[in-house]
Length: 277
Image (tube, rainbow, N blue to C red):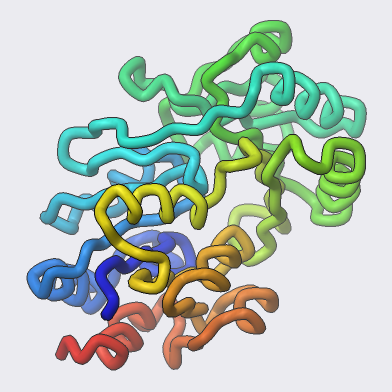
């Protein structure tokens, strides 16, 4: 019997216009009434995830930054956080710089209204279009960027071939120091490299949270579309890939939705699985 449903946002619960289709909203409301716990499991920062799910009136748990921070959606109460070790973060940033890659650093200064730290040349350079659409970021010096101890993730959007080279160098030289992945099923750029605490992943943090609620891994349904969802899909009691999922997701899933994210694939599939019509 399933008890918890973990839902990714982009490419999954959200359509390409970054809204939740009404059919998906109705399904979530009915699932909560039926006793299922809904967890939003996203690579987005918590503030962004909360805004995008604001039409869901019920109290929910939001697992943000790919599992590196978990908060309650109603009162913002902190449930869990996992930071990158300060020296490990410095190593990543310096290695990236040596490859002419500038970082976007996700941090937990939520109460101070800051989620992202970035250098001036980063937000005015090749990533300028990205920063036109976000808030709660702070421009700081390169020196100050190397002196942070509340780092949730270090992110590099860009050309996939360059990011793959960085990813390989990082994992070859420091195989146990980080959990990292490259996303390639996104809209904003060709690819996105995310580097995190070695224990920071959607699945690992989801299991910790579920265990605190007395829910077993086999009682979890996970739905996603990109490579940061892969561990969830492989290990949940039922792992569902969206029809529009990445190649790795489509190959790994127990089930693939008949409809994509623009056609309420989440609601359509889960109603059949759970019998919630």
